[in-house]
Image 1 (cartoon, rainbow, N blue to C red):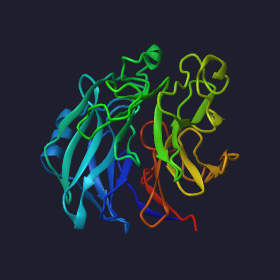
Image 2: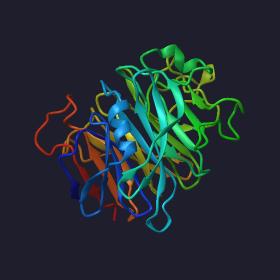
Image 3: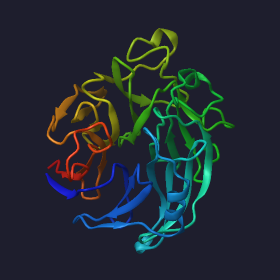
Length: 326
């Protein structure tokens, strides 16, 4: 393991660019930085960066959250990116073009996701099908998770321009799955299974395999026990004190979940017929873990979050670490 970068201001998400560098969101600063594999950190500037400063309204769990790379960047050229941001009246998905470390003007492609001090969701990921997946929280209004007409408490599947993606369970809806409390991690295995990490309330955190149109039970069910009512049970659960799982990454051999309250990295082995018993890694070594991503070289980049008012802050506590799986 080695440290890639430190002294970051509440980093929340990262996405690797075609160059191999990482684009990192800073939640409370409402800004972006580009981090290279050797640790050089450069602020993103330009009209889009200025927009983020003006328009993002951090507070509680809201702010500048998820990031995804949509396409472009061949030969180091401009690349389109998506950002999940808390604005004055809602959570929204923004799209713009990044040229080096200059971000062009941003335009909203999806608006009207209810915001709250807690449960804002915020993870973005481009699936193997090329469409953009968006996780939303219930914004502290649990019934919204069961309302198919609400964008909250869902995983959404949209085109890069924000329309319902072709093949959605309801062709006129952006909803891919529902009944979620607060999904903050999304990833896919090589065999096409989609995994999502979810914060429980007081008892059980979850790792779910997401199926189109699946209902994951919140607020009727937390954890397992919902199949008799037509809900999809999680494939792994943890006591909330052991996990609070945020970002996740999927490799050929396992699903890795960054745990905030649990202050560890969970590995859930992939098996031919499902998943194996979860294994705790890095327990208590680096504090609260916010995100984990597979780097171009096959290592994991793990992001810590200890200076957002919930950890035990000290200089340099918000870092990115490189963990080798070899």
